[in-house]
Length: 92
Image (cartoon, rainbow, N blue to C red; front, side, top):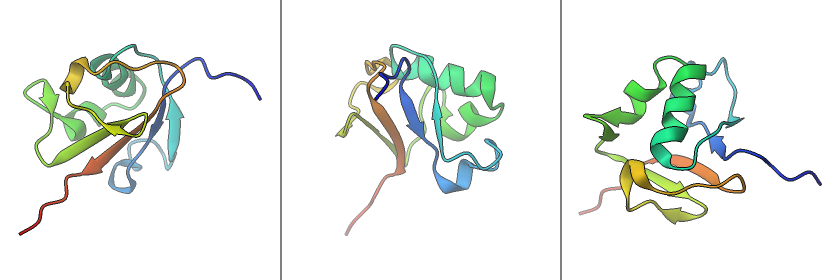
């Protein structure tokens, strides 16, 4: 099996219209901000859906390598990670 050279991003269903239906894409970046910048270059409009005021949009959680990202746009990535953008789950 070949080693990946870029983080793998799983695209949430509501955002797949921006990726022409692609569910999973590999993009460069050594932190979450760079990954989102690469997504935006490849799929214009993606940053607006993921970010607000240069941070992750409220109500959206990001899992990097299976753990919830706590450093926002500075969260480190590497070529082997999987990144998932998930709606935050509220309870009451």
